[in-house]
Length: 130
View 1 (spheres, rainbow, N blue to C red):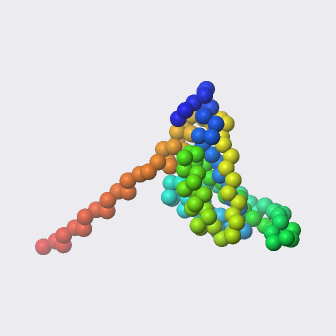
View 2 (cartoon, one colour):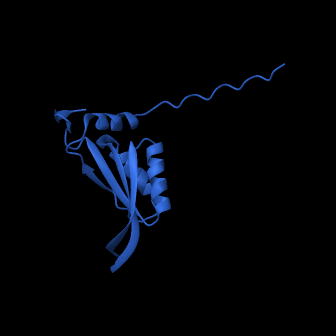
View 3 (tube, rainbow, N blue to C red):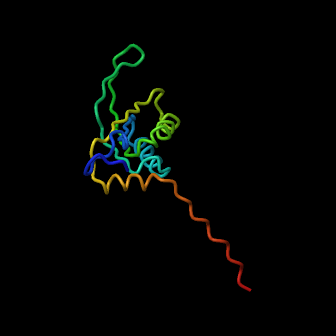
């Protein structure tokens, strides 16, 4: 981790990415699947929130849920691609905010938990007892 000072990563080295969705169930599944795929070290779901936005030349209002992901910046494109593929919205919100500071141990944990891991091999089947 490049550090500019105590507990200050190089700006842009770590990100919090957010999206919104119209159901808690979808938010929870996006959060779980991204962490399971190690695209993010952790995720949080918050809501419901009241959203107001333009869609198809009309002002819309909707109840939505936020999903926040914490990850190293070099994993952003993989997470963004995942969200576009898995999200139910035609045009999902995908925004990234760079961390300007954070505890060294937490940032290290983010890096460790998003690194590729070898999946343990399944144990060989046991031969039947004679």
